[in-house]
Image (cartoon, rainbow, N blue to C red):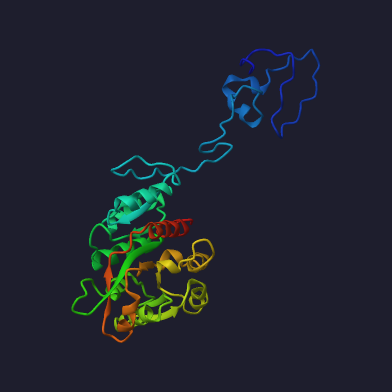
Length: 321
């Protein structure tokens, strides 16, 4: 315990740094009280170590503590549930609302789908570090303007973008969906207004690849085609694409491919990825596509169990940042 001010102590008191110890004086001369004992000079104690146990335990954290702890910003509350740990489950921005089977598949893989309909809603979720923006138009139509706005918001926030589509084939008069190039034009960022978007197309069928390339080039995009995901990495190294478009069945699920290359080169957050299914197209009709007698149009993607599994696997690969 600290000495009481003014109390005489038998033991000599510690001297302040820089203060020489006074030589002993004859007993005939009364010794004044030690300077540190003066109640009016109590501040002098600050220059010597506190007595053991007199100060209580040292704070281990908090401002100016032994361990500095930075102030953590609270996550924004959403309208559905209070914030959870970022990785259990992890937010996945989706538009439009997923169908029941896709919602279940995403939940089973540890994702919590959060529906976003505008750029502002994307911005409001950024602090929660969403895994990706997943555009899966099964339950409702998507507009080019909204798609472009959401893609720009995700790109500004460095959130990867995955878009699904289905391809159909019919005569120009019978085609009931939009030209795929309309969707892809809205998705494709470009280096500047003077530079057209560079699209990497991964498709092994020559007729489908030719029709897609013609459609994209007609709308002012540059296209480089790879026959498979394995070849796409070499091609991407040469062109550094702004947009990757590929047949979902070409995605390498367990080995390194184009997604891994984009991540390794810091491009995954700024290069939207479009995967499509074309299993419903009649192979016997594909020569008509090559001859220009039929055209490609956007249709609903396949909802088979294999396709659902591949999409969720791809999201898991994209969302490992």
